[in-house]
Image (cartoon, rainbow, N blue to C red; front, side, top):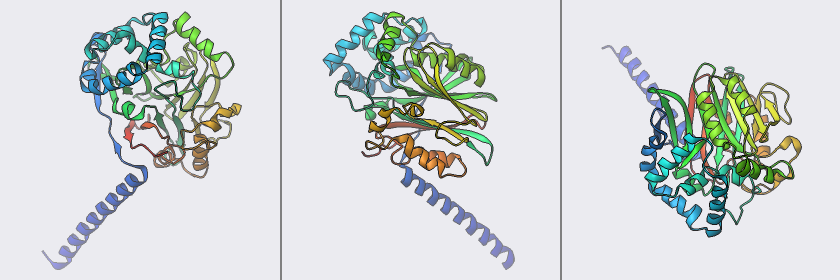
Length: 392
């Protein structure tokens, strides 16, 4: 081997080593800037099994933490326990027999009352009664959330990022996992799940015209909204919001069918549905019976550029004053949306890194963000993680 060849060989090796070093430094800088992120434990949910047996693996994996959560949610709060039991008694069994069967199966294996587990399925609907502050009456808060759909003009694809904010945060995060729902040995859809909660707040259906969906809390938008929600829950006994989301993920064949279903399905409570697809995206501000307002990527939307749409938990286009009293971004009078939009508007190209940086910015990431996700349907990206908690 001549000296020239040996020199070239050493140079290439050194260059490769330096590239790896700088890559490691880059990853370290990102980790320090954004905090430590852990992958979600993953479990298959086999829809071919009887509903009572589908979540056996999940119950075994999370039962100790679930018992802690159940104790905190019900047993330690006698007034809440009484109110929840009264709500369950008035609602009766879930109108969807499949959901009720899953509840029975999980309750039996976890050794908790069926009524208590059924009450867990109503956490979203019941918490819409609260104003977005730390409430001394309820032992839980949220889900809050931030969702952004952005067009990366550099590659022409659409990215979707989300923060899920839910308290009590330590327990909620320790119950969070990835569910891969299968039928006939093939994936139907995947979702971010919370053990004991059969409904869905984040999910994705892969495919050339698939879709990703996130749900955010939308607090009652008019006087009488609380009474309307309770009527839908107890008198009309409508299907719970999160179960409707799960069935749409299971049955909708494509993005357009999903948007139609999310627009027309009757809900118990108000909600935001944030839906992204291949080069498209929309945000639906849902009333129980209809769409109150819609943001569409690429169109003229209130207070946004045409290459992104976003929502937290408030109808900002209607100047909902409650947004300014939301403390979850770290302090009052600094809405998470305002902080996020300031960064988005200062970013020329909304790459995946730019969007992910935005949801991790102080003032956007909440003090109880338990889950984060980045999705790109066109590229088949489902990047989900459990972040460290930020300090108040």
